[in-house]
Length: 310
Image (tube, rainbow, N blue to C red; front, side):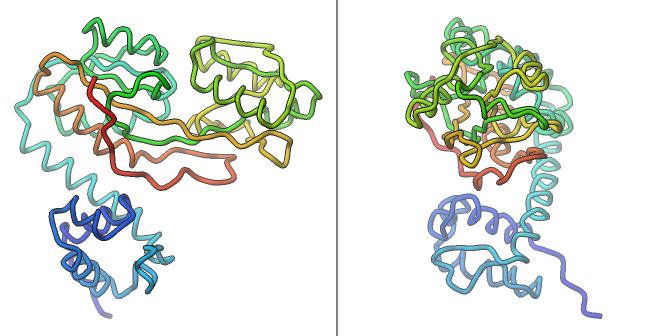
């Protein structure tokens, strides 16, 4: 039996950079290597595994079936590697970080991420404040929060985009409210990007609608959905068992993705806050979400991009 040699962490990191940036040249900028060097690294990784990871036409960078399987292992390897390095490189970092985040993201995107950060930085305390994105921006401007993770608002082009999350219609598993002539909706109050995207999409599609329920929290929207009273709009990460995702075949238009943005407080941040901010930028695009009834998964994660600084 032929034993596969131990994997080189640098090769795994380059593989992930290609997947996350979508190109050899852009991956080279991430890992600090030329395009030929990146190509050679991938060849070495494929030789070590004994399997091709990309199709022969690498201009399109399509993963093979083995490449898709290896991708999950590669992300797990790099998470543990980076977590171990952080734990021993910065174990003396101490302090409290005030993180603002909507309850939806706190519940469905952050638990594992924050667990990994806590293992790497056991002396950093995270004080989390949950409220809607529009209120988080206001609190940040009052210097009440060190970091904010929020939905990108149309009139606020600042911060760093760290994740794109698809929006989807949701309804009760055994209910068909979207079949009604006037679509009953459960939505967040005015100012919500989810609400705005939903109403715009219905207007373009020529569907009549009425708001039968609105709530400041996701829990209220979930109650309306599970009761069969209305259709709502959730980010894909928040779809739960007992829900289904109606779409064009059910008479509802496609919805655009929303962007999650990381903001840092304008004033100087502590070392603890800087480390958490860097960790979020690096890790949030890789958070795996549970999509029990989705027809399709999230788009491939992209490298964070700056849209200004708050």
